[in-house]
Length: 220
Image (cartoon, rainbow, N blue to C red; front, side, top):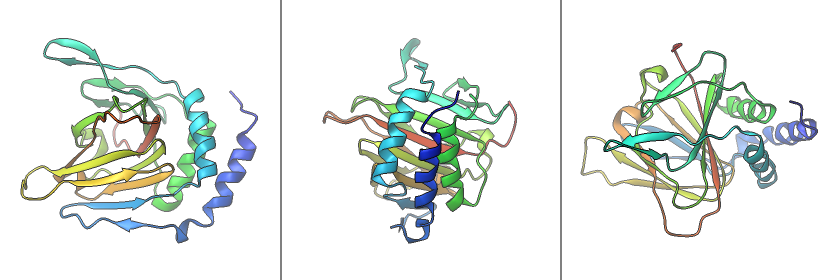
């Protein structure tokens, strides 16, 4: 499918890419981890346009998980896009890749500019309101290799992102606010030593879309 706004969106994204080296960046001082945060990797204008397109163009699905013998809806909508054959399994949910769309390829190129890596897949999560969440976990599935590299982009409503150490209970939880157009990078031993979550909240929240770019190292 071809979209009329592809050319304009491409120009907008590449126009801003020249300013990447001057972006505000925060290197988190966290033991046993490598975590870098860019609060505004995409401009507000870019983020607004991308958010609208992701809402309408992504093939969102409602996955289910088993909890105490009962099947319940995952508290968010998901989608998995990537190169052919790059399947991904988490929480016993096997996700088969959908072919890249133009807007996803444009976001991917912007992320790869700073990563200096080529990603072959992306997991998308749509948090519709404060009731949607993701519980404590690590992105440490076998397909991601020993030291997974995760580049996480957020568009839409701001949500709290929390980390906790798996083994050292004396370490305090780390908390970030994921902003509209932000980039969070997790690499090194982060997934080996830390878990992260997006907690539920009773506050009124605008919808948020999160994209986590990954490298699947094996065919499943």
